[in-house]
Amino acid sequence: MKPYPYIITISSEKGGVGKTTLASNLAVFLKALRENLPVTILSFDNHFTIDRMFARDGQRSEGSVLEMLEGEPAGSLVRSGQYGVGYIPSSAGLNALHARFTDPMTLTRLLAESGLPGVVIIDTRPDLNPLTQNALYAADRVLIPVKDMASMENCKNIIALAERRGMEREALALIPCLVDERIKYEGDTRDQKTLLRAFAAERGYRCLDICISKSPKVESLTTNPDGKIYPILTHARGTEVHGQFREIALDVLKALDALPAPRASFLYLPGPAEQGFRPMQDFPVRAEGLAERCLICGMLLAEHPEGRGFYYETSDWTRRGFLHSSCFVDVLCAALYGLTRDSQGYGIARLVVAEKARKQVTLIRSRRVGDSDRVDIRLFDAEGEQQFQKELSLDEPGEGEAVGTYDRLMQLLSGALPGEGTGAWLAVHPVDPEYPESVLGEEQYRAVHHVQSVISGAAGLS
Image (tube, rainbow, N blue to C red; front, side, top):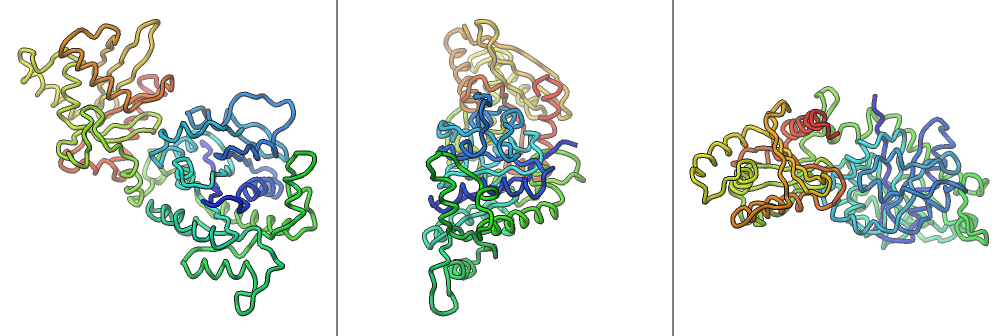
């Protein structure tokens, strides 16, 4: 059976709360407590702390989290790191990828397809950029370190986002970090950790009983003359923090053992009902990731919602949305049969094309053949059987209305597949124009992914 990872996301909108210390040392403790458990860590931050802690001398230099986010299988990018922990090297160039992750489901799918087994720990930036939002949605467990009232206040944005997207509250937990045990208060809230837990309870947030104490010994592990980063497991034995991390790791393992299957195994991968599929609570997330405009005419769909007769989704899951029926049928007429509004018999031909389009799935991809740019268009029935194929050259589109046709086709392709060389393709599915959003429901959405999976295999595109 294909392995799926159990994903832990460490997140906080405030810097300096011990987020990376928590992520990296949790990875080491998990591996130490369960030697046969694969543990992989990666970071969306650009401080390269993960690399400094886990890198071995003489390892290959190519491949990083950047390539993973661009679609390279994560399993091929994992390096065998120190302390038995696998890691994917960090990258400073992730900001340019944010546009690819406006759909909050994208990372979930990448990790589900990655083949990574065991536990994957994601260290995020101290903000809610698209990559952080994707990491939160992909997580089986979210740990939010807090050390003061400012970081406590920032939690509300993370928790509100999770609730808006239908995530289970039990999956999120605050953990008091960098707690100074010397600070004492009068009354019931006698110390920092008790105060933070009280404020969390007052706001309805789940907070772990475990905390991580502030420790000069631990601070020296990241700031020292050697310029290295050492783990608490091996270099802070006998400290209170050592025992606290052991408790946190044991808590994670307990939750992992109690989980029937990781979130990635059923969230968006199609399959038989007995394998499980995410219920309708994920409908808002699918709707949130939709494009705002029809990619052909450019109109805002919120202002022109009528006539949304087709739903498109790219094979790399980075773009999804609706197209106006009239726009898409016009493009098909011209691209497949060379017919434009000025052509004789266009009206009857358009009716025929529209009828076929409403019963079939259209696959569109651009590719380079020698020195020629070409577009491959194929039509498939509901079972994924290919019914029609045509390849167009984009080198000499002609003049007049034909130029406009190619312009609209290329506008559709460039809007859906902005990255070059990704190998991604576009599938366009007919939907009910009276209620196009129904395609995002549980059964219909599973059916969309099933037919795309069949098409991918049949067309040799997997």
